[in-house]
Image (cartoon, rainbow, N blue to C red):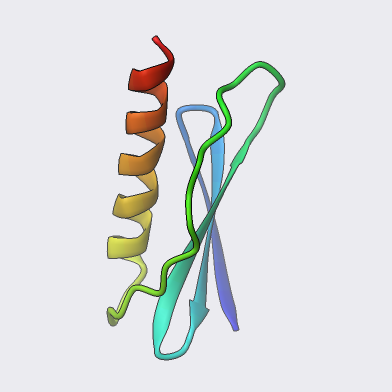
Length: 67
């Protein structure tokens, strides 16, 4: 299983290749950040870009609601 680690707006995003698709997990990197309410979704794609984009969009929505 292949896993990639990305950071976006003080959150860690772990993208994992779980054939036939990709999964994204989102974790805050410091206390005080809003908790991201997400569901693990299998994303059928040949590369991790769609999973990463979905995770970033989820973070953006969470931060917009927290303001």
